[in-house]
Length: 302
Image 1 (spheres, rainbow, N blue to C red):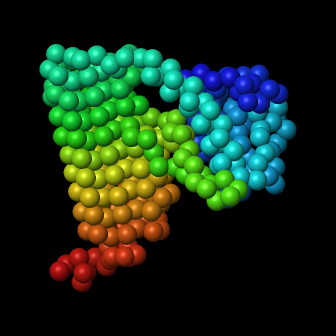
Image 2: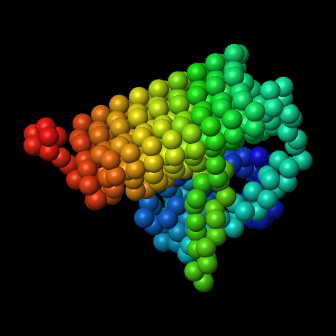
Image 3: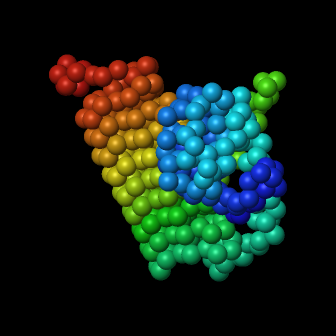
């Protein structure tokens, strides 16, 4: 994607190539910052050609505004969404000009797809434009993979979706809902497994990251910009909202849910059906609704 900012904001003469998150901005991208996370403005230092929609009242240092485009707004998420929709329309028009090719074996690939050696791909799989998958992948019938860079020894079971459009909503001044276009990716390491019917959302403005040896069971959902660290187990029916960080060697029990922007430490355990609404520390086990820490003796011993 390449979109000239000048088409909408003639005072700025640079091109953006995508979106990024305020906590980890990249040069030449668009992003927004609300008053709740005003401190993220400082992350723009030493970055150039970012178009940043900033809530009125936030102070932007001169050295940042000099090297980037700053648009002040009462509702930066919505103002960002309007601009992103214009950029997304242009991007979608370009994508629709591209074709899909039926491969021997009965699956489809878009343009500029790279798949490593010794892959096994069943019929009715669709792999979108620019997707990269490492060697020894196994992708079973009905799966859809888009907007993704995936490592070696990937296992994707039937009807899973990787790179689905994220559910990110902004409201206008009349309270009407608008979807913010997704501009990010899904980045997966090696030896990742995605269970049947599971859904991994692409980043809305950054990337959804799943590290090595993560195992996801059936019918689970991983939200946009989630970061799942190494050797995590995610059981069937888990619902993980956007921007969740799940520490290495942890486990989410069946049908548990994690609220957006929650961090869970390494080696933590979330019990079956638990609803996690606040941070969980390293090595802690929680259960219930809302989820609470369990004592090692007593409840766990039973």
